[in-house]
Image (cartoon, rainbow, N blue to C red; front, side, top):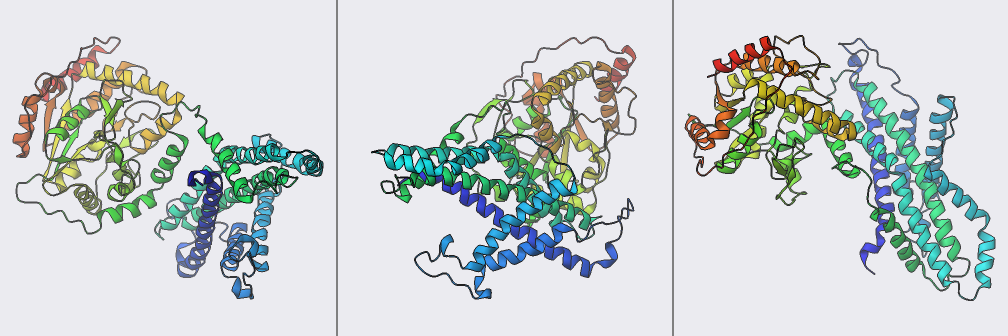
Length: 606
C-alpha cells in the first residue's frame, strides 16, 4: 500500500513525538531549576532594575514536572520495576508491561486533573462554551450508547461491508477535522514550549530568570495538559466510530490493515480544504516565523553557531561591506538591488527568512526556487521573490542589543559595543564567499552610524536623498496603505515589527536623533516633513558618508554606479542600466515654513 495513505496515523505519531519532546523539555527545566537554586542562591532574590522579588520557585508545575520525569523514566525503562514485554504483542503498546501501561494512563489522567485544577479550582469559575470539539465528544458518547444496537443491526444485514467502509472513512474524517480544530491548542503548545526553551537558554544573570522560567513552564504544562486531554477524547471517538462499527459485522471482511487505510484516506480530506485566510502567509508559516523570530536567546544560540570559527581579515584599503541607507522611500531598495545584480556582492534575501541568524544551517534544509514572484507590498512596481535583497539585517541588531533602542514611542540612537560590532563583522563575513563583499540595505542604520563608522573604517556608507516634499508625500501614502493592510491582516504588522520596519503603518516609530519635532499626527503631511528634516539634518553633520540624490539615480543610474565603483575600488558593471520612470507628484496641505526649512537642508546636502 502507498505510504501516503498513512497520513492519519502519521499525524498521531507526530503528535506523540511532539508531546514526548515537550515532556522531556519540562523535565529538563525541573532539573535546571533545582541546579539553579543550589548554585545561584545569591542571585535569586531580586531583579536589580525593578526590585521585583522572585515568586513561586516551587509551585504545582514544579511537582508535576517531577512526577512527569518519573513517568518518562518508567515508560522507557520498565525494567526498573521488573517489567518485561513478552508474548505476541512484544514491542507494541499492548505488550507494554503493566507498570509502563499504568504510567501512561496516569500521565493522561494527571494531565486532566491538572487542567481541571487550573481552569476550575484556581480561577473558581466555570464557563460553558461550545466548540466543534464538543460536537466530536457528543458524537462519541452517542456512538457509545448505540454501539450494541448498531452491531446487532449490522449482523442482521446480508452485506455489512459498505457500512464498515463508511465507518472507517468517517472515523478518519473526524480525525483529520479534529486535528484541524485542535490547531490553536497545538500552536499554543508549540509557542510556549519554545518560550520555555528560550528561557532555559537565557544567561543565568538574566533578571528574574527563575520567575520567567516558572511562568514559561506553567504555560507549557497547561497547554500540554489541554492537548493531551483533547487528543485522548478525539482518539476515543475515532476508535469508537471506526473500529466500533466494523466490529459489528464487517470486521471479518475488512482487516485491521485496511481499516487503517480507510481511516488514513478519511483523515486526508479535511486538509485538502482551502484556507479562508486572506494572509499571504499560511497558518503553519506564521507559526514557524513566531517560533524562530520571537525568541532572542534561541536566536543568539543560532548566531553563535553561524559565526563559529569565522574570521574577518581585511587587506589595506579593501572594502569589506557596503551599506545603503536613507529615510524609507528614498530609493534604497532599487539601488541595493541594482548593485547586487552588477557587483561581487552578497546580501541577505527572502530565502533566508525566518532563520536570519543561521542562514548556513537553514540553507541545508530549505532550497526554494529563487525566481521573481510578485510586486512587493509597497505597491511601487518593484517585484520581489526569494532571491530579492531586502532590509533583513536589522533583526541581527535587535537580537544582539536586546531591543534596547526600541522604545514605546520612538527609536533612539545607540552605540554598538566592541563585542557587538565584532559579532556583526563575523556575521556578515559568514555570509560571503571568497572575493565577495557584504551589501546591506538598512534604513535604521542612522541610529548607530557613528559607532559603525568608527569601528569599521573598511565599510562604505551611501545615503540616498530625495526631494523633501515628494519624499514626505510618498511616506504619507505608504503609511495610509500599510495602516489598512495591517488592519486587514495583523500578521503584516507583526512581520514588520520583527524586522524593525517602523517606517510607516500601525507600528510607525519616529527616529529620535536629538531634535524630535512636536508634530505627532501621522495623518498630516507635516509629520512626515518633520521626519525628513530631522533625519537629513542629522546625517548632514556626519562624516564618512556619501550622499546620492534619488533624482540623479532615476535619471542617470549608470553614472551613480560608476561613482560607487570609484568610491569602493570595486568592479561594478554600470552598462545598459534602464532608466527608472517616475512621475513627480504635487502634494498640498503642508507648512510653508517647514517646507522651506527642508529645502535648505536638501540644497546643503550637495
